[in-house]
Length: 124
Image (cartoon, rainbow, N blue to C red; front, side):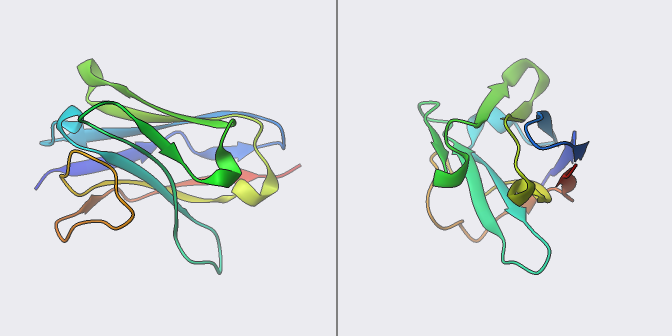
């Protein structure tokens, strides 16, 4: 099945930046679409971004467009989420996931692998 592990979260002031990493073991990430989700306290989980395997196309939720960038480093078998101009409303636990499909979609397939999450706190 393989595993995903997120890292890079932390406390940052509004307007600051963080780069999250999603490292895989026993999964070749460049073969699959990879998602970033987040869940804020007391709120439902929401999708943040996704990157296709088939063509490298990227997708973002509206509230992070222009501020977040998803990318791959295939040599390191890692997907990143660069987050700039962070806002307090970006505070959440961020998760990466794959459903072993090659393209991003609005709903994940049955077979999924998720990381344990990394906490991002945006506060002054």
